[in-house]
Image (cartoon, rainbow, N blue to C red; front, side, top):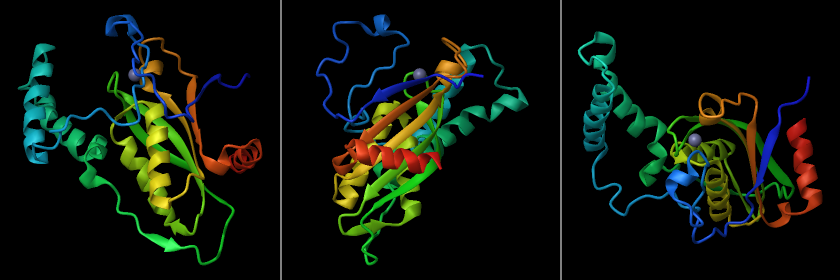
Length: 237
Ligand SMILES: [Zn+2]
């Protein structure tokens, strides 16, 4: 049996093209997944509505989508769906859009003077593709070399989850996690590797069930062949 083919994308540069569409229209682009920048494209007034107001609005709009599709909203099974979806969007799967949900991170002195890489591997996450609003299911591995402070291990996991709970593209998710770790830990010696399956590729469109997408960010000391191979070795174990 052959191993599943993996598309490898290197995203360790944050410089993006100023014209990501390159002259193509959105219709031309179709199913191609575009990545337009590090920041999630949010409007300045994104949080003018409260969470409660957002849930009310989304429930009304989702009910309309179901209605347009001809679903019978008086059916007992469907009746509660608009409100359930609204609650799930705001409180769960897209809760990482709101900065108030950002994990609070306490730092500690590196009192053991541990100055090798620390790797937190196999962090499972669930995100959603911003082009199709269907799940991205994946594993993140994050690593850093302390510049004097250390972070609680569960916080590494929480940072991954926070950025995953947004409409996402994998390259941005990778870079957002890396930039957050760099800022918190005050070092550029940070690595992030994400291996994920996109349901918009496997369950629809091209319907490829075996491909996965790998994105990487290697900052500072991690951007050397030696550190990358050391890190890859830990991930294999
Ligand atoms: Zn998609």
